[in-house]
Length: 107
Figure 1 (cartoon, rainbow, N blue to C red):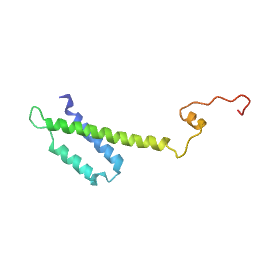
Figure 2: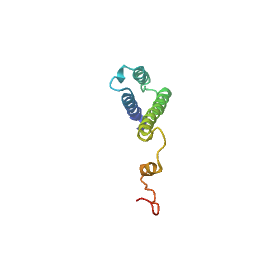
Figure 3: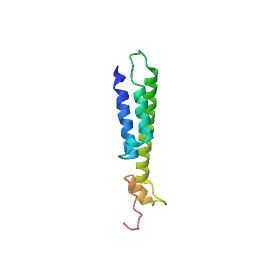
Figure 4: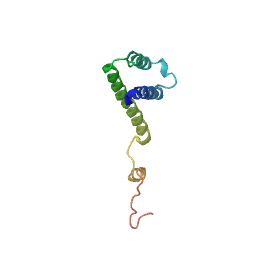
């Protein structure tokens, strides 16, 4: 019975990701309505094995992973993407390195 709380936690996390993606009006989206419908339809019953419930939880966890990954990818892309190429000094400083000083050069 340890998995009893997991589907609810996954549902909350999924709705949180949807809110982060859509903004404050996320409850008016078709995705929100679909998620709520499916979670209501697949509530745990008195059956010993509720395969549909486990399948729904697996699909929700997979979709949650996708939404999180897309959001994190966009954040990384906005942080590090720049049109054109960076100089060697800029690229080195992004990862915390410094280029060696040239002998007789500036420095």
